[in-house]
Picture 1 (cartoon, rainbow, N blue to C red):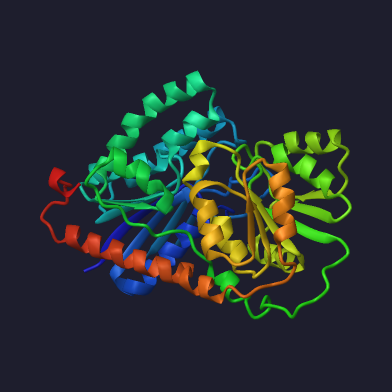
Picture 2 (tube, rainbow, N blue to C red; picture 1 turned 45 degrees about the horizontal axis):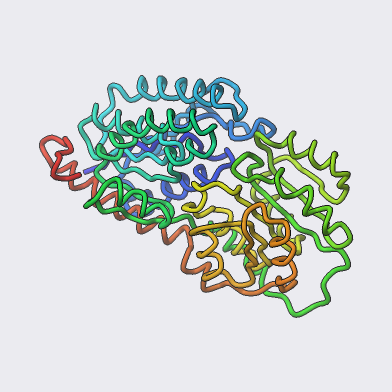
Length: 410
């Protein structure tokens, strides 16, 4: 019997996003586990993650037992109104596409709750199992990102939606163990799985090139690379101008990315008269690997917001696979994770200039093997286990006369 699964992800390759790569890895794992016994429909958007990154992708892509539908959404930047308009367009089309379909299970991976809620709606309409993959705590984030009054108001609106969405799910996976205190408090007695981010095969396959090198004299000027989103969540505009200025005689920064605060960062760098920071647009991961290979240090930073004390950035796994020194402004769970599990990672408090300089001085300017970490957090292995969990769940529900989720199963 063929198991039919709907996979919802706002981002999917060739788009550049942690959620995109995560969704693709899961599709591959599901097909590897069941082969011709699983039929997967992917509903996603045409590439839109970065305004400055354009990738061609067909609207409808068919292969045996796999259909990928990419929905055109309005052009948008990172503003709330633009994002809301884009999601509404995506949701309306997704509901229309799925209205006459039957699924054994709906899987939704979501960072801002909305895709998870859309998955809950489709699963209830289909009377089938729902598997949620939660990549962020949207209600928590709203309180930090919006002015206090508006943040509390928005949280009061979305908190009931979160509760309805989570209570609609048959299984809920949390991408970061740091999310557990929040969800255990709000949903006592409920069990959560913890399939985290991981290291993609693309990076693992390059380990022969990026193996630990012999001790060598550090270069006269150290090349520090940051790759990823440049938005409020990263807060680069709050630390990088002053940090680059402090280390102007030692370090050259190369930033690769785009986002809502890019212009703010450029203006801050100009005002600080910083000339040791270069910025490139987002690039494909095979190109990014070459940049990583040429780097001396890899840099990441999360803003000093309460919500970010729970997260576990996907970038940590990607950086760790290169064996390069990691220099990171992190707090909470992510800081503890990096300090405990990643060799040669110097961590400082977000937006702390003095702490950043001190952490930089602690780094060993050489490659150090992290093969144990890479093996433990191989995305292939993580997704294989997650796929088994999904298939076990879908088989259980597809065997029933009806697939309605009952209160006792929540």
